[in-house]
Length: 186
Image 1 (cartoon, one colour):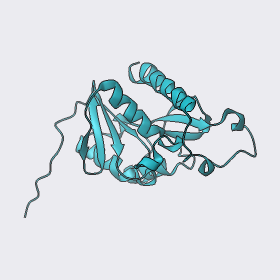
Image 2 (cartoon, helix red, strand yellow):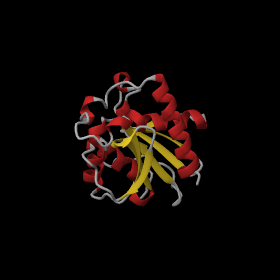
Image 3 (cartoon, rainbow, N blue to C red):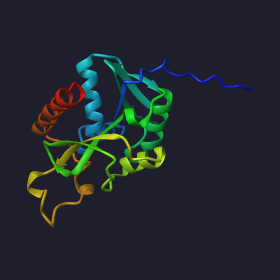
Image 4 (cartoon, rainbow, N blue to C red):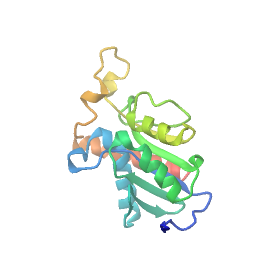
């Protein structure tokens, strides 16, 4: 028996696939580890677009961008990312992963390409699923500024699942605004 597969309409070559990493569930909302999900939510609010769901991920489209939120946990992000690339018939050179980075100071972000995971399990899962590290990443800092260069700094596991304060969420909103203005539109 043949299976009929639903597939998205043909995606233009210039379209970027942005995947925000995080953990599903209300207990993870507003945590440092979910800044990738928060970025996707920010774009959904700005674009005022409805989110669609397809098997292992939810997504929305706007202006040459497709934004995806995997429906699996952070450390298993590779499978949904690979499925999203296949669903939209896209290549890894059009992929941008947005995630937390405990090696960067909170309030900063960096764009990288082909860089190691630095122990980030979600990023490692994507490397393994795709068989490459040749894609862009927007790394959003979550480390307290006073801990950046300290030898006795906290382990990331000790704070990544902590809820952000209202003022930290406001800072995050300003970071998102900069990313959109300087990177996605520039």
